[in-house]
Image (cartoon, rainbow, N blue to C red; front, side, top):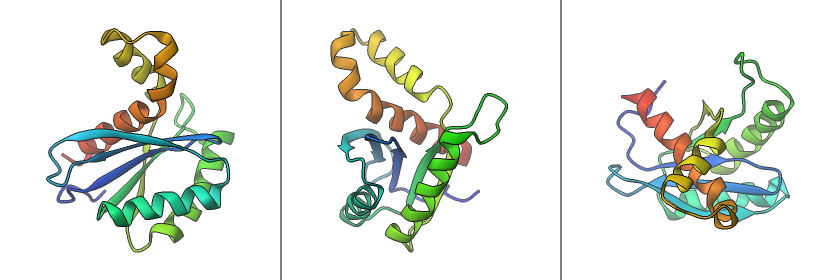
Length: 143
């Protein structure tokens, strides 16, 4: 696993309709949620992410992989792996890595609840906060 020296990382919480994003700041010291992308077409989604990768001078993309509780890739993970293949082409030469995203959305909702955010508002931010959780997990693995 590489990535310890990389400062500019973009995390992606891939969804069929909504995709959450989070990134490090240019120094690599802060992790920030970014606006989600509401796009169901994988080709258009890859293009939008690739544009963001170029705009932010990203050094690595980290994609959340929805593994089952036993670590096995189920149907959602297989769709995410197909998306990963498309994304790798779109963002090349920037590497795309994966990290287990298990319960990241639950953790996102819990964090927002702890901050006092009402349930009606949490849905709008959940995907990008889940991407933030994915980014934090990646960074913890690289330490």
